[in-house]
Length: 262
Ligand code: MLT
Image 1 (cartoon, protein in one colour):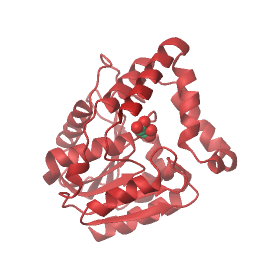
Image 2 (spheres, helix red, strand yellow):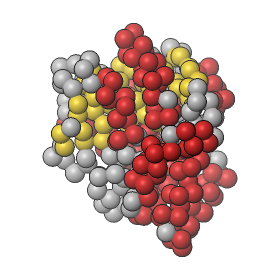
Image 3 (spheres, protein in one colour):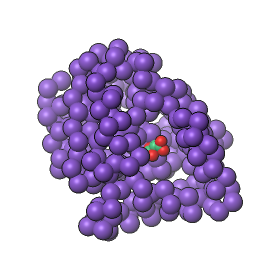
Image 4 (cartoon, helix red, strand yellow):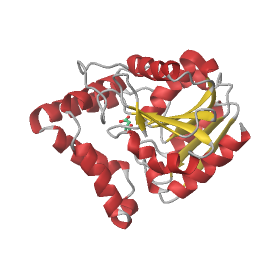
């Protein structure tokens, strides 16, 4: 993988002449959550991923982010790499970014893959929870928050059956920067609701959701697929909220089939 010269950490794999697929990771993770998908797709697609500002190897900056600034960053990457009609693939917070990016400028993209995400903005209850989490990070520290949050993202089965992999992801997240994590929480809390755009999406859309996803359960995504005209939904067996990691063979197979059709 090559690192870009911009301030964000960008990673590209594959032939730039192939169709670009841009992977946007979830919270509180980094680009490596897509390793298994990129490994599978790199010979036929130009795979691009990056660390969202405040997370992974990307700079923290002032720590004040919005969903709009996250989309600005994504558009900067697309422009910098001169990506034409890329397919966007986002998980959870990466899905919020992808959906808003498509709403802002759909003509940039030729397809959309939404994993374990939702179009609705935070409810008041959700916003209060985000505020509680910011308070918790201030009082108990980021490691405390991460060690409580991450186990909810995986199915109980994945935690026991693939404990080594789960522990690796958890340990990486435990090293997150508190300012970056709080900035992301506030950006998610303040994001707009993209539900009214779902019926206007013209590009082909694939939706995937782990059968045991406790954060964005399958019925949340079923409501989305009913509204997106050219869409297809699959429930990922043996997976929670982190379906691309927890059941990579299934997710890869469905992504490959989808990409082959567009
Ligand atoms: C994520 O996986 O990106 C987060 O769980 C999203 C969220 O907290 O809303």
